[in-house]
Amino acid sequence: MDNTPTTTAPIVLLADKVAFITGAGRGIGAAAARLFAREGARVVLAARTEDQLKAMTEEVRASGGTADYVVCDLADADSVRAAVQHAVDLHGRLDVAFNNGAAFTPPTPLDLVPEADFDHLYTVNLKGPWLAMTAEVAAIRATSGTGAIVNNSSVGSLMGNPRLPAYGAMKRALNSLTESAAVTYGPEGIRVNAIAPGNTATEMMDTWVSHSPDLPDLLVASTPLGRGADPSEIAEAAAWLLSDRASFVTGTVLRVDGGARA
Image (cartoon, rainbow, N blue to C red; front, side, top):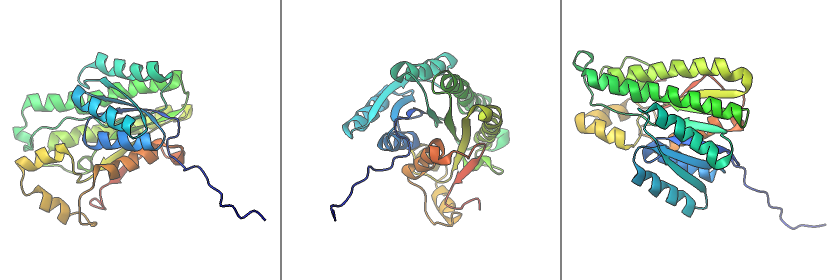
């Protein structure tokens, strides 16, 4: 009898997937770049800041992953379309996409939100993902045929948001776009979901805290798990939704908030 231990290849969520990630230079997007590559994806990283993209690409490659980058401004329609096409040009197809990139403006009551801030949040946080989704659907349809998209929303979209009313409004509208896309493209085998992160240690959160020093204590007090999330924990949820393990999940907005909205 042969008692030699058998070995099995590690099971990876995104084996050989071509993955496009916006906002990939830092925070949740950077965590997604690292994770998706470890899970077998060939990642194409997109953001506005080339130095950050280059550093992340080099980091992923140094860890044995496959990564490339493209500079992309979500406020520029041509830039968004070109970035998605760049992923297809590099790898011949697109399988999955994580629309993570977003802008932030200082917390302000509804009646004091500057019109320029409102317009900027609309352009980057709502129109930008819409542009990305339309390009990604076209790319998936023309190459892989089936695939998955995840949009990064926020728990701030799920209820009244007096500190960030315009930000919350754009993210709530993004939830609606996500659901509409899921219904529209589900028959083609293209799944579309969103995640709604809670308190997460990102540069955007640091900026918010600089304007609202009481925020960390308030957020932790309202979170049953009693802490904030690491960006990698948010990326894990996106990776699962993009993977074939979530093959019967579409049109959902998944809270990743430590129970804060339970």
